[in-house]
Amino acid sequence: MCELLGMSANVPTDICFSFSGLMKRGGDTSHHKDGWGIAFYEGAGCRTFHDPEPSATSKIAQLICNYSIKSKTVISHIRKATHGQVNLVNTHPFVREMWGRNWAFAHNGKLPGIRKRKLEHFHPVGDTDSEHAFCWMLDQIRNHFAKPPRGRKALARLIQDLADDVARSGGTFNMLLSDSHVLFAYNTTKLSYLTRRAPFGQAQLVDDDMAIDFCTETNATDIVTVIATTPLTDNETWAPLKHNTLYVFHNGLIVKY
Amino acid sequence: MCELLGMSANVPTDICFSFSGLMKRGGDTSHHKDGWGIAFYEGAGCRTFHDPEPSATSKIAQLICNYSIKSKTVISHIRKATHGQVNLVNTHPFVREMWGRNWAFAHNGKLPGIRKRKLEHFHPVGDTDSEHAFCWMLDQIRNHFAKPPRGRKALARLIQDLADDVARSGGTFNMLLSDSHVLFAYNTTKLSYLTRRAPFGQAQLVDDDMAIDFCTETNATDIVTVIATTPLTDNETWAPLKHNTLYVFHNGLIVKY
Image 1 (cartoon, each protein chain N blue to C red):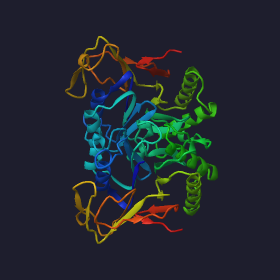
Image 2: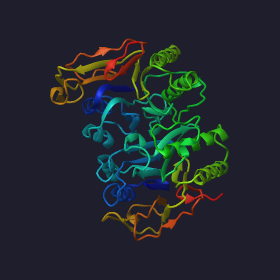
Image 3: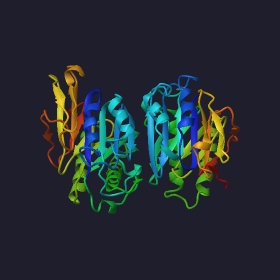
Image 4: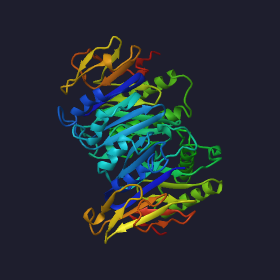
């Protein structure tokens, strides 16, 4: 299995602290050593880093821990290979352009049988079930909406239906997805989240002897939500996301439809 | 205007030396300070780095100079903005998936009027004429070939025709393109190349006080071709690419059809 990390914030925020915790799980405190990747949205732009090396020892991962890349939406993934070889082409997040937007996707779980689903517009480059599921979802979205629908509700409803469809076919479907405007999260087994806002306090990583005082790092109006497979800190209250429910995060908050 | 750098090799090779020369031109020895990017193919996988910062001072560019990422096909670009804002979304190389392959593209020049061309499958995320030209070419290729054609000749002929078509509409079209199998190069004004093979010698960068002895870095069977807007070394013989002619590089050599 793999681990996911996502972030949604109302101001460009660096993810160095959370990413430092996650990368430890890539071959140090845990066994997710078969590559890692991260996508940072900066406006409509999407800056990605992928590495088939274990994140715990990757020089590129070290750069990301130390170099403050600020973003309002981030998707990251560390991999424990189950389907597909350990190589660059199978590292998440996968990215595709649709409607002139960068879509990024990362998945945790197995999806037996997903590769039988026919694809039309988007095709996997690698051989993971995850990338096939992503391409299938984009195909369906594109077939429903040749152009972006007005308002976000129609798109969210469709993505909920598609995620349910994938989940119903068996397997485990914990995923993070973004169209650069919002962050979608869906899980059948395991995803938790935490929203940090004023008054900010201290946070202590589970996986490293590292603490941060967010008071000194933030402004009073900042809102930052972090989503992870399992909690990354041990002195804050993480809430599990309801199973089989699509969450839409925008500017650090859950959007209700 | 901008500068291009490409590499085709018969064994995975690092581009640290050439990239060190190019990055100096991004705000130090030259004025191409409006961002930079690089795409490394590793098999079918494509690892990209993009940064709107000047390459001469970018920490990510420094990592790439120092950290040996080995690849058989590389496309890199440093930007002097003419069309479009200075931001991440407008940094080359642009990447799209078609036929389950990663296509990467970088362009030097202006293409007035290109944005009037209608697009169907692929759409720009940013607002450069370059990304529009890339999307238009991919649209045409996809409309001609729903699946990859057998043999490479048909594809090369089509890309020659499309590049001629873009060039005929006015402006400057110096570009590097890859479908992960081969590297295509086309220029209307300026691109040079150099093939290094045994017996290897020393090379001295134009833009930095840096030399390398390739004898100690290579095997006797290595073949590495570097393509650049202007020569990167001053003690080797670079050859200009003929204008309006599509070159196809594979395993470091020019493929003749």
